[in-house]
Length: 390
Image (cartoon, rainbow, N blue to C red; front, side, top):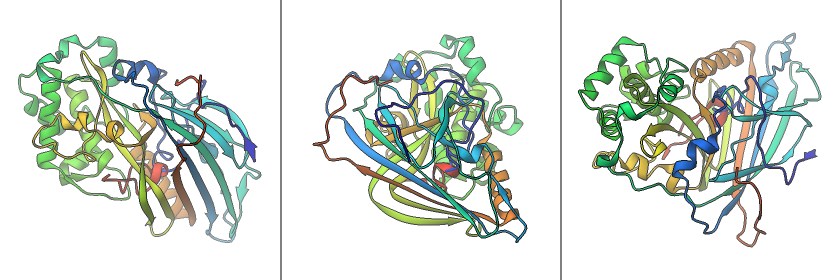
């Protein structure tokens, strides 16, 4: 085992990865080299009350149950683990990895990742390979600025650069799809106040799309068609609406500390099995609203949205619950990736068993000083498959 205690996770530069084949892991996150620290700085609390410390352990086992002559040749993505993000709301340390780490870089979306050095390039029929990674997570108290509709900026106050980066047809958001565009503009009407537009989109989704979880994520047009979706499905529909009318938006995912939870979920005809201990995976939208900047918009882990759509911001899980921000998805089509990976496992007879477990450390644990602070829904496929069963 290789220990990396005392090393905050942060990244350099990389091409792409697989943030952990657990939901997110299986999503190749992409976040441009746009430092999250600077993105969030306008809304970070400067409050310095007590931090909370957690230990997260992720154990993944690859099992070759295919034909006798079938070998599972491990891809680069299967050897890559996500390293979460460091910012003024959290600091994450990689405490231990069961195999040596070859490199620490950032993926195409700026998310830090590490490449593990497996002891073998493949496993044969009947063989397994297991790896484990352990993180220490320090969460700081969080708050948002006072948000009022009459203080919001307009579409014209959003820079062209931001719109070019966060409103284009990238990832799963289908901003050129005719039905989505027609509906977005119909809901928006002549409104130009950004927060007022966002409220309209939130309210329409809450009134017309019911919560439903499945083992693969849906594209916005699919969520619209069936009028159903879970946390990332609803967030992605909101992001599509926002991007269509010129409001920058992207998807963020993370895990929620749920001290009473311990369940095992089976997917894909038992080719993907996930055990979640005191943890749930969740996804929400990040939306740029002048003058406040990037704000979280949570469509599913919030109550009181119908009475006041701004509650989707004020009461977002990442603000009011112990949530660890994992990664951002700005352009990568993780939905297509998830579907291809499902087909890969099923067609070859390969299986994955993953156990994600988080525990809160006692308050007496020594505080870390002078370090750089750089659903009701969970994810059925954990970060590996991303946000499902959330």
